[in-house]
Figure 1: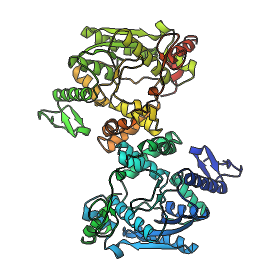
Figure 2: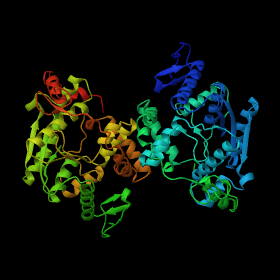
Figure 3: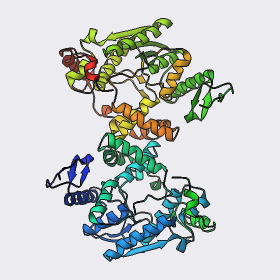
Figure 4: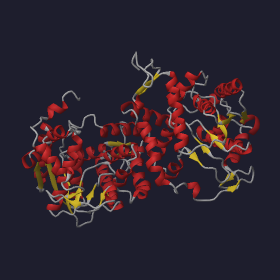
Length: 318
Length: 318
């Protein structure tokens, strides 16, 4: 940003430049822009109703704390959910940020500890299943988020996925033309088959913008990336999109938002999970395609394995 | 390639490594692989019939000379078409390569000179229309290729577009989700509405492979990129895909070929040109959406403009 840049709205000194909007903003009008983008996402994609009882999945990072903060500011009722994944110091610290945010504001925060309640952690699950850690982590979180939302009587599960996240997942699915995944890549998945409604109100904000939201609002968050995610494809796709965005500001948002506008409607009806009905897991009762759901199978395998410290999986990766 | 690498097929010393095939090849078996990929494209996408009378659009570069050579080798009847675009030395030299290839083999080569026959060249057209050169060039070539094919009674117009070209165009159209362009991005467009059948037999070969084909076969070709294309989006998308390919060999081919397999069928019926019928141009009789076709309008504008040397448009671009 150039020294002396002025806010597009009020001409006071700017604190942030947003090349894709071709404008600079002061703190007040930057927050306003963020609120407006979240409201626009909620309205355009029919994400939330005024009387929704919301559960926000909170990691302690910028996105999940920003979305919780934003929804409360916009007048929604929203509680938090934190899942302790057992990824060494990273998880310990992330939990502290999540809990401090909730405590300082007197907000309810449901906490689940994978090791304490299910007898495993993500590093151990990754080793036990011989799959990439992000796979075991995603499976665990999806199951526990869904279960917590349904058990608590929540009508909407909110996650902090931002524009960069969604664009990177979209690029990955597009590079392989995974049509059934593309068909599901929407900012809202309706409640169905025993799953809660799931929504992503931050899809019109970049991760730079959610970080700036937290800074301006005085929200402390864990800056580090998960140590197990280093070098994964998702971060590689983010890097590719960032390079394209630098060459053509606005291209990242156009990629994701035009997908929602132009392509997603053509893919309705191609969702794999629309094409077969689910039964319920014999063990936990969750929706499942087989007799025992993938989560219960993961718990069985991972909890029987000796504990694997995260350092064993990340050493030499950085 | 490692010193001492051996051909996958015969174990003789290799001359080229192909990471996406995870293999190395000697000259003979590399040529065989190229032929096989072209035959596979022709058969899989029903590109050509044995009795097609083929016109190959030849630029003097590696791809168009390689496809002409390959089709003749595979037993097809194929004449050449060269359009002199008037892009300074670049066009002069490219024409020499095209003519030499044809002369040495006693092949018919139709030649059209934009300046001599239509009173303009591409640099002048770009300046006169104030559009990017590649736009005026593409419009001119499409019209003249179609016209030459129809006038000469050819049943198939062949271009040398390779996997890198098609993947880069696909990435550009995907980044903006241009659904009507995506729906048209096929290795074959059937003859229709006064257009000839157009096919791209090299879509399963990369540009590195077509270059190697020419080297091994002793075909001299113009190595330089067009000086007016420097810095365009197409080359930027190629660079993006090459970086992704380096990180994950095979990803470029998967991107394009999976598109044809999985997505293109879902887009049938979304082609813009299927959705309205064309009339014929009052001036030249070609298919047109308006009274006068875009090519005739370009000729009018560009031929009335004073001649613009290519150096005026490319200076300082490199």
